[in-house]
Length: 207
Image 1 (tube, helix red, strand yellow):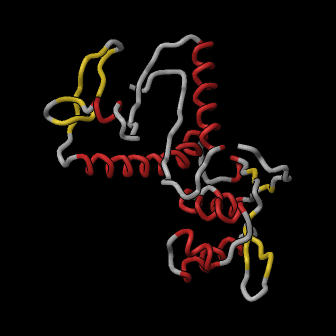
Image 2 (cartoon, one colour):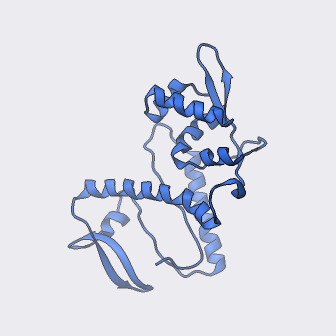
Image 3 (cartoon, helix red, strand yellow):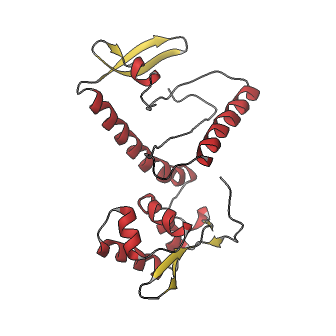
């Protein structure tokens, strides 16, 4: 995605606490795109107007959101680029810093996946089986692992796996995956359904 050529703002401790709150990410996405009123925020987030005003006042007090228009109604915006130094966060370790950002979204990711599974059928379990690279755990029912679901046409992928690659092959895999995501983001359709994806690649095994 292209980045706006705007000087970043440097976050202090209180700003960092709010900017790193994953529940506020939809708010920042809207206010960084352009000025919005409390009514627009309420409609976008599907919350009541009092909740929208509360969020905007909290961000304004922290000097994150600024008022850019008061013609009939206030409109707020948030700078599109921030640098949040690890040192000003409440995390005691870099591990905790990353986990605080990743884990809540992974919980939501799993919850959305479960909704899809339950629409398919109510009874699920796990299959632990020996594969080419050792034991593997797969979601399925009493008849076997749900390979048809995850490899079929249903737009659902819930997979954690290991693969042995050379450094060059791993670099190529990263480039190819990133290229696919970039291409899809360029053809983003605002009126279409929203899908979430998690793209992770790391050296080492996670089981």
